[in-house]
Image (cartoon, rainbow, N blue to C red; front, side):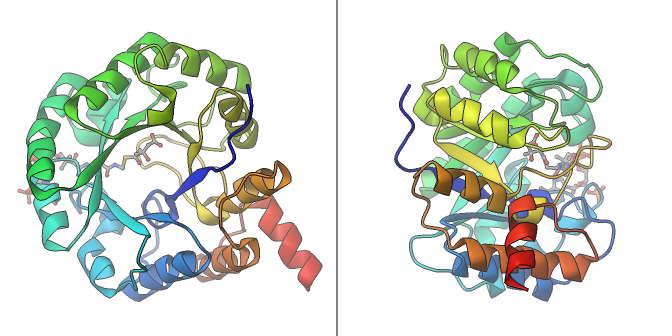
Amino acid sequence: MTLPHYVRLVEVGPRDGLQNEKQPISVGDKVRLVDDLTDAGLGYIEVGSFVSAKWVPQMAGSEEVFAQIQQRAGVTYAALTPNLRGFESALAAGVKEVAVFAAASESFSRKNINCSIKDSLERFEPVMQAAEQQGIRVRGYVSCVLGCPYEGEIAPEQVAWVSKALLDMGCYEISLGDTIGKGTAGATRHLLDTVARQVPRHKLAGHFHDTYGQGLSNIYASLLEGISVFDSSVAGLGGCPYAKGATGNIATEDVVYLLNGLGIETGIDLHKLAAAGQRICNLLGKTNGSRAASALLAAAD
Ligand SMILES: CC(C)(COP(=O)([O-])OP(=O)([O-])OC[C@H]1O[C@@H](n2cnc3c(N)ncnc32)[C@H](O)[C@@H]1OP(=O)([O-])[O-])[C@@H](O)C(=O)NCCC(=O)NCCSC(=O)C[C@@](C)(O)CC(=O)[O-]
C-alpha cells in the first residue's frame, strides 16, 4: 500500500481536549486557542459542542466562542450536536458543519448520551434532515471502536454496522474513535479491514486517544490501510468524561512531526502549533502532552 500525499487533520483540541477539564476556562481563552490553531494552519477545527451543560459543563458558552473566533476562509469550524436541539443552537450560532456521535458499545452509548445505539440513530434522523435542508455537512463519530470502558472488547463487525448506519443516514465521513486508547496497530488494521467492507476507506477517519501510548503507531497502521484523515488534539489535551482514565487524543504536533518525516503534506506550521499548545498548557497548568512540541520548545530555549 502506498502512503497518501496529503493528510487532512481534524483538530479536536478545543472540543475533545477541553471538555474534560475540571477548572473553568473562559470564552476568551477558548477563542484564543481556536485563533492560534487557525494561525498555525489547521484546516479543520472542532470548536465546541451544543450539548447539555449539566452533562458537559465545560462546553457551555460554545455559542459565544463561535461568535468571537476569527474565521478564516477555507477553514472548517465545526461543532458536536447530539440532537435536534443541539443542531438548532449550532445553526443559530452560525455553525457551518456539525458532527453527530454514536458508539459501538451499548453501555457507552447510555453513559454518554443516555440512550441505546438504536435510539441514538433515531435521534440523529431529524438532525440529518435539518442539516440537509440547510446545506450543512454532517460528520459521524463512532466511539469505543477498539474497546469499551464498560464492556471490554467490541466486535469490529459491530463498529462496521454502526458506521454503515451513519453513512447511510448521510454522514459524509465516519470518524472511528478509540475512546480509551487501548488499540494496537494490529487491532487497528483488523478493524479497518472489517469496517472497509461496509464503508469505503476514503470515508473513514481515525480518532486515536493515546492512553496506552499507541496513537502514532495506530495512525501509521491506518495510513498503510489507506486512511488519510485523522483527528488529533493540540498538546494531546483531553480525555473523555465517560471513559475513566482515558487521556487525550494523540497530540497534533506529534502527528505533524510523523507526517513531515514521511513527506506527507499538511500545510501546518509546526512551530506555531507547538507555541499554541504550550500557551494553553500554561494556562491550564498542565504538562504538555506532545513529545515533539516539548522537544522543539526545549531546543529553541
Ligand atoms: C444528549 C443529551 C442531551 C441527552 O440527555 P437526556 O437527559 O437524555 O435528554 P433530555 O432530552 O431529557 O434533556 C435533559 C436536559 O438537557 C437539556 N438538553 C437536551 N439537549 C440539549 C442540547 N443539545 N443542548 C443543551 N441542553 C440540552 C434538556 O433541555 C434538559 O434540560 P433540563 O430540563 O433538565 O433543564 C445528554 O446526554 C448530553 O448532552 N450528553 C453529552 C455527551 C457529550 O457531550 N459527551 C462528550 C462528547 S462525545 C466524545 O467525546 C467521544 C468522541 C466524539 O470524541 C469520540 C471518541 O473519542 O470516542
